[in-house]
Image 1 (cartoon, rainbow, N blue to C red):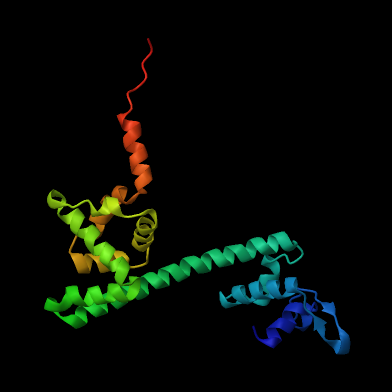
Image 2 (image 1 turned 90 degrees about the vertical axis):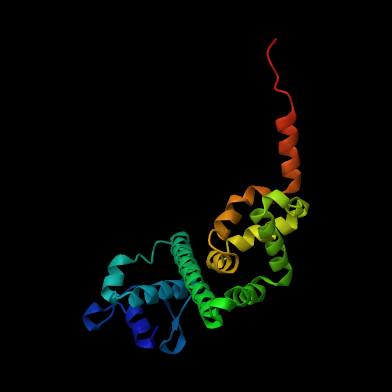
Length: 211
């Protein structure tokens, strides 16, 4: 935020261009002492100013006497919106990267090129697990039971990988159309093995009947 706008935000005489949004404490040599609360409010002023609101409009919209709790709520909302925007940007970036990777390889090199992209992104070990899980799901008639041998940590890593931005498109380009949906459909196989055993025991117990 420009120094001039900070000054206007803190200057109370609106006839002389002030907005009177904040009233920081006076310091020595005519300088203002800005508290952390003042700095936080000025940050919110900056964000609204960037959205096109004038300082007088912000003064009407913003109650800087609302207290720390209200200020923290505003900052939480800013952080949440920024997180959503960041996730959307990551999604766009990764989709563009993997499509560029596939196009650059030519029709015959798509699989290998996307596999290199996946290896760079998720690592050799996780890619190896993904490859074997995909094989099991694509060939259930000759499955070896590899999925059931994965420990809880490995299952959790696979779960989190499926939530990565743009990973759905990468898997589709790598393993073929419908591959990601097949993975999602097989997620019940990736639950903790102890949970599976518990469910099997529960389902095998005879139901209690009233005599």
